[in-house]
Length: 204
Image 1 (cartoon, helix red, strand yellow):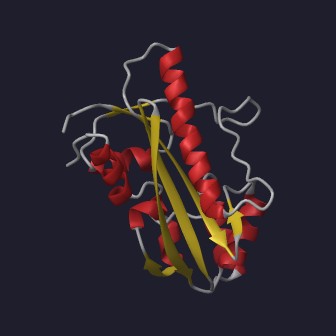
Image 2 (image 1 turned 45 degrees about the horizontal axis):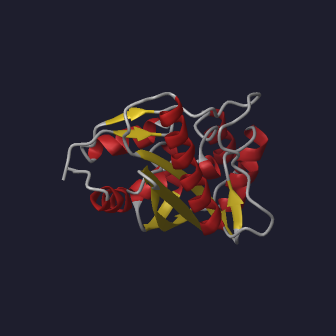
């Protein structure tokens, strides 16, 4: 095992926080994600693409694109970690809401239902990309339109898959969670540690 530093190909403060929980040294490698600019990774599902295939494909692509940028910028050759989280209800992928109305729509659909949250983590190391997926089942209480409106007004749903944050105020809607809490947050720590151990990176 080594104390190798990683690149995290994500701006997410939640993923940074979770990696710190593992005691992993990392630097953020920023991908272009802002609207109005050409994005480094186009996060759009193909027609008929299963949710698990999509989430793994995006995580692998983020890791691979990050590795290409590392080489192009002549940065130290460290492993690159990418991840993607999607909320799925009845086979439909709920990404990040486009606006407040879209967030309201998503939350109304999730109200009183059990949905799945799948997070794929991928690490590009050398010529290989290793990936694992964690899928959890999350059940929401029945939400009133007033509750949804107040929550959307906080701004918390803006950049969250499914329009809620389980580590934030959105936790008040969750009546049951089966699976990985860290996976629902955005980086499943068990699966991440499995991959890192596989490539010889020390955790904890």
